[in-house]
Amino acid sequence: MSLDALRAAFDAGTIITLAPIVFIANFVFATIGFGGGVVGTPIAAQFVEPRFALSLFALFECLITVRILVAGAGDVARRELAGLIPACLVGVGLGTLLLVRLPVPALMLAMGVFVCLFVLHRLWPGNARTTVSRRWAPVAGFAGGIASAVFGAGGPPYAIYLSLRPLSVAQMRATLAANGVVSVGARVVAFALAGLYSTPRVWIAFITLLPVMILAIVVAERLARRIPRAQMTRAVYLLLVVSGASLIVRALAGS
Image 1: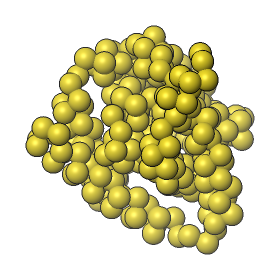
Image 2: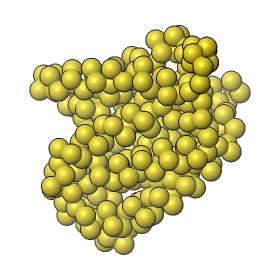
Image 3: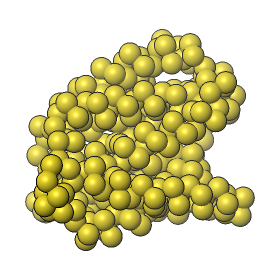
């Protein structure tokens, strides 16, 4: 590719707009253990095309999930992964087909509704939790795979299932990261096959914003003990509700 083509693909305005979003998303992920895609994608979709946002944040999620997995590889519950991963891969494939065929307003509406439902689920008063059978793993894997591809946020179905299994906190976190590596990795491959990475614009944005992601992780690790987890979580949920509601309004308005 010529230098002129690379210059044309570099959009300083987009980079400047996305930089604080990339920072917030990765800061949240490093602080509370979830949220790279579910936080960053709907906010970024306010300013860029949703498919571009999904493609870009999938690359960032790949890196951060690998980092978490390396730190806790010994705690991975491999028998749980055996039930989750095959169905997850099928879900990612189907979700990618939906992603490339849905019109932009429909995608924005679906993303906004999903984000709002996700927040409602997280805020719902906790009930006594029972242990579920491992036979539910394919259901969680399939649902998470579709959500991962279409909304950039497959974590909730996986987290719900694993939270109802007899796992320690360390095992759950490590298993989520291991499944996330496969889920996000499959999403990136599927997006590439669908042509979503055929433009240099995504790669230029990713490479340019990579230092922002690293900075966010470093800052999060230094401030993690100073910021109450509950306070950070409430702020994230408020941000998500506003973002999700805005996407719904824009979609219904036909923008």
